[in-house]
Amino acid sequence: MKKNFLVTVSDDYEHLTGVEFICSFFKKLSEHEITLLHVCRRDASDMNKALMELWSSPDEKVNGTLTVGARKALDKATELLSQSHMSVDQMITITCAERYGKVKDILSHGSQGLYDAIILGKRASYTLQWFFERPSDETAQSILRDNLLSSPLWICPEFETGRKNVLVCVDGSEDSLRAVDHVGYILSRQDQHSITLFYVENGAGLDSDTIFETAIEVLNKHHISPERITRVSTWGLNAARTILNYAEEFGFAAVAVGLHGLNKGLLNRINLAGSTASTLINKTEKVSLWCCP
Image (cartoon, rainbow, N blue to C red; front, side, top):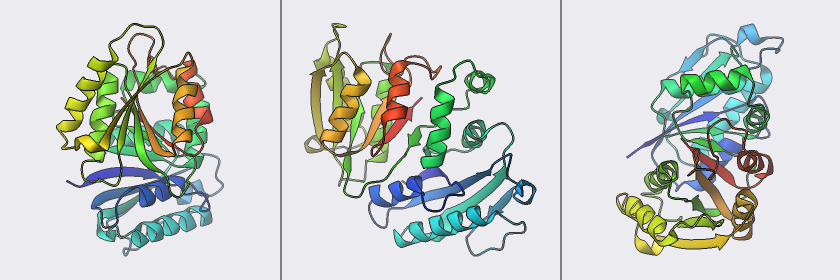
């Protein structure tokens, strides 16, 4: 089954980390539907020239005029995706002027389509980092009220060739199982990647065996073979640091987490202000972070 991704593209054509990640992560000839989204900054001098444009294919002409940087970035993104053998007839490009702030505009657009993931590049990741650290911000609260974050969010701050496999953080919560389900769905036909179920013991007294078995049942529904699944349980008072250290030590391509943890678990409550969330966003440098609502 084709996966449908919304990939954000800034006007910085030298740092297309979201595009570079999916080109590296997926098998050649993988069949995906890609929507490239560029949000023109509110303070851009020629923002009014970047009103909504839609290409049904890269061959069609654009009626409006994009900024020079945005034009280069979108052209380079299309080139990178074409070189990875993703068919150009499965790509569309949308550019729009900033209305409510870049983060809310991205999430708002993502909520309008049936996307399997919203993929943020380096620039958008920095904006999201700022956003996560301001829980009282009106934009943040409106996003929570409007439930704009309906699709998994992939944060790709940097790109490093050679990374493989996905570390899935589990704690028995419903959201962590949704993260497991998301990873199983994405990797169902990507057998070059293995999946490590990762549980951080912190004295809560949970049964890790039960947590692992439940997660494995979810992966089995996506036909993930047992030899692709590893279970790891470790002690750690600082969950975020324990996760990142393990991901870096073993060179994972991505870490998947649920946005709502169990009680005070991982990414507890989507006010985006918890110390775990801030640490994961601030410290993630070479590993993609998949946040699953």
